[in-house]
Length: 128
Image (cartoon, rainbow, N blue to C red; front, side):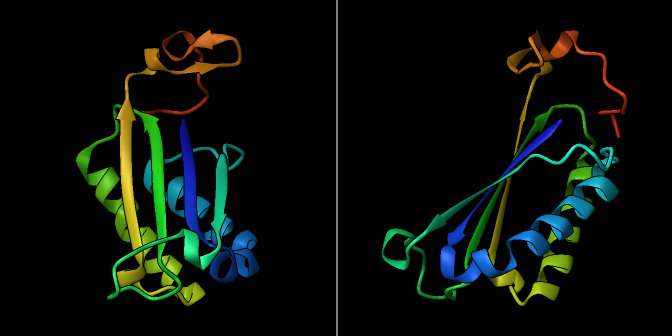
């Protein structure tokens, strides 16, 4: 399970929202071995005056927050981060304008389909 929040200006992200989601999801599938149908992305668009960031970033500055079950290896998480930097740049957003945070929580801290996460039967591995 992975839930992704993407924060940026509407001007920079709205025109590429579908492509951004496709690229980001390909990274999650490849690095974490998520099933292709498990796409949970939420975009949060801001007007430039409402999205403050350091002056050494451009208007394409984007924050990606990934919440997921704990259990992935350090190498799998690093691979995810590397793939995101690499593939998102093809959309015209340079790596210096991307910041990624991975939040891991125990399965029992999730509630999904009416059950605590640790009681779910998943059709994919979390320990990759």
